[in-house]
Amino acid sequence: MSVVVNWIADGGRIVVGGKLTDELNRTRFSKFLAELSRRGNLRSYTKSEVDDEIAKVSAMALESDDPHVIALARLSGAKVAITNDNKLIADLKNQAICPGKRRAIRHRPGKPEMPANSVKALLIQAQCR
Image (cartoon, rainbow, N blue to C red; front, side):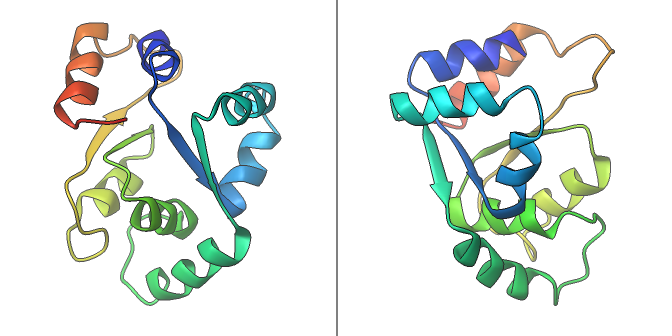
């Protein structure tokens, strides 16, 4: 995922909030998130903002067990999501659940990555900044 790190270094932004913030802060990415925040490359939503959206999302027929991620995508309008969860990808692509143009990059830890030029093309095509 070095191409994503390079994209962030070139001005790309990521979004976090609520439960996702808690989950990421328990990983090796906590220091990385702090640095992104310091540099202005992190948009953080409050727990109450995410919880309000989760209440709406929870009433929908989700395939995944990640309403907090879907709520965050809906709040932020994120155009690219990176996950290894096929059910979450299906929910993110479902216009009834998560309206808007969105691409999903399937990241499989321990498996060969999508070619860097493909990831870069997706990020550019989505006009992410």
